[in-house]
Image 1 (cartoon, helix red, strand yellow):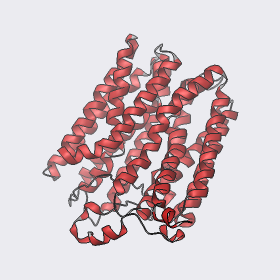
Image 2 (cartoon, helix red, strand yellow):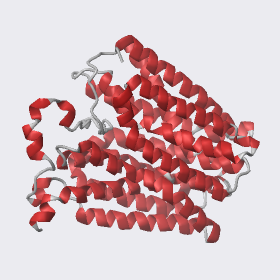
Image 3 (cartoon, rainbow, N blue to C red):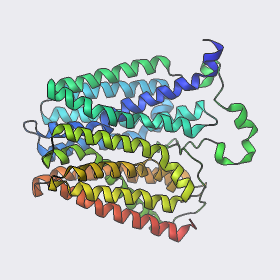
Image 4 (cartoon, rainbow, N blue to C red):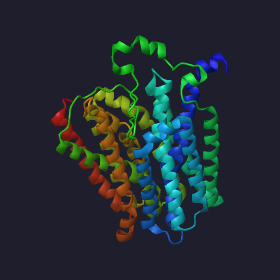
Length: 429
């Protein structure tokens, strides 16, 4: 390998991380909402079973997140990410084969494992190994991969389903995931030392090591399998220890955030179709949501740094609440509510990936930080799993998905109140 390539191989690593997020998060999860109306319409499935499919995928991903530390300790990143990508391809292929609920659940299990094992956790390890400075930029570019999938996949999938078949659309995504997995498997390297290179910015990092934490990578990865995140901008550590009662209240808020950030996006397409909008319009709104989510991921962290965590949290939740209210008004048949809801909800959605790392850093001490991070992430994942089971049941009972979105408006208000109360009690922000 040439000297130039060794010196700049970190750019190849970022590309691999982007592709992994596209493959293991974007395909089986972020863009999957476009398939929900078609799956619930299959014979013997229906709305309640449609929720069960999503709930099964979320539950399996939650279990894998708990165990993922041991997974990467045993396999390391290159092999671990390759297996996760192969699972994405296999799961999507299985969805293409499935024609009954049991086989759809099998496919959901496989995709859930791919998401839990091959998402941000492996990317966190790789970025922190290959970057000593500019960690936030590398992590941000990597995380955008799932957002890009939510922009382009819904429109493409809807076109293939409309002109060909549901099966072909799943199989094309499976082929895409397999191709990405092979490319990443060939290019990815676990550590710079594997090719005789050094981490990006190593010399500058060593020189600046004593000048403060803002240049240091924040790797929240632990042996017990806690879900890691890399915060893309400097965050001031809080140095506070929540009481057991405050911790329980904040975990309830995290469960609400999980329900808001995962369930509303998962059922967006089927909500719009059930209210009379065409499949093509629903797919377009998913892409609009994906564009707003992608930009939100890129700029929310900077916003929180500029105006503080409390004000930033208020801005994010205001966008989410107004967006959800607009989506609740889609039964009027006015497309403007669907557009506004998709834009505003997507703009606030980054609170799930940016807000939680900030809150966990500011509301913990060095001694209990790993525990707090794990608790907040598990609370988020638990909320998303539990509430994913609800919309289909409420659809059968009430005849509309709007009821589920109305409950999410209440959840958003409650989560914001709990978070602000905790900050007011424990910090000066």
